[in-house]
Amino acid sequence: MASTQAQLDSLREAYASGVLTVKHGDKIVTYRSLDDMARLISQIEKALAGTTRKSCVVGCYRKF
Figure (tube, rainbow, N blue to C red):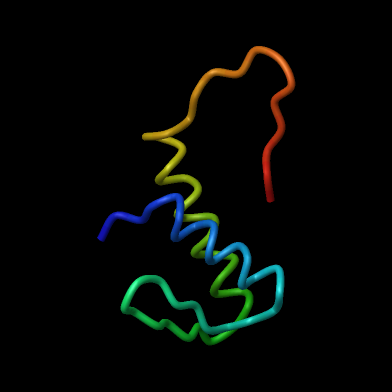
């Protein structure tokens, strides 16, 4: 299943809050640990980078 930017954003928000359960659409997922979530965030970021990364000329920053 391909992940979307919205799913990544939801996962990041939950991670930042220390919440292990994430709801996206009609699905609810509970992760075992924050480490599991961090690994998934990294995997999704890498997958999306290949399809959504754009060149940046001025004022670029990366949101974590």
